[in-house]
Amino acid sequence: MPPRTPSAADPAGRPRSIRRRLNLTPAFHQVDMMGVVHNVQYFYWFEAGRMQIMEEIMPLHDAMQLGVAMPVVENQCFYKKPVRFGDPLVLLTEHRCLDLWEGRMVFSHSLVHRKLKTEMACGRTTATLLELASGRLVKTWPEDLWQHYRGLASAEHATARED
Image (cartoon, rainbow, N blue to C red; front, side, top):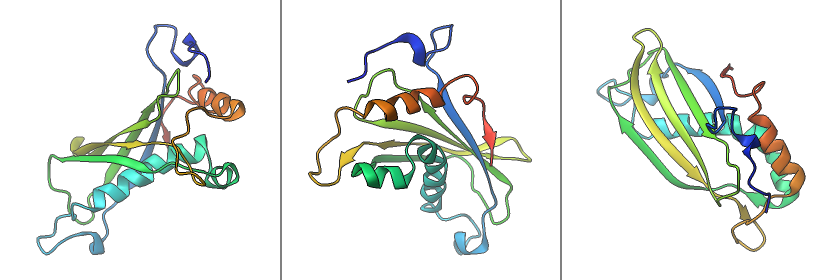
């Protein structure tokens, strides 16, 4: 297991994060009879935000070569205000980088109305890393993958990016 070192934290001792932004506009097929975005859609959006980060940490092709998967083990969503067809939204997704592999990765999500500057929903997704062949929890990452993960949280990459 990689040793615990302060390099995953900034000089002030705070954990570094990977943050990503995703602009969204609800489509007609995503709303219900009342014109409000259906509750399940938020989880699709959270998945898109999480996958932005996961594709940088471990692209699907690399995960397949390693024989691992990162299944979601917990999903939460708190609906604060109704989102409607055509609302201009931005999804902010953040992952606080780990100094030591804890068997899970947590992603925080905030869905904000771009014009109103109001948080419409927020949530959290937790995933783990499993070996596909055995179904067992991965207790250590390959050293090159771990170094890549930690490098993503460097000051150069820790700023929010718009896609």
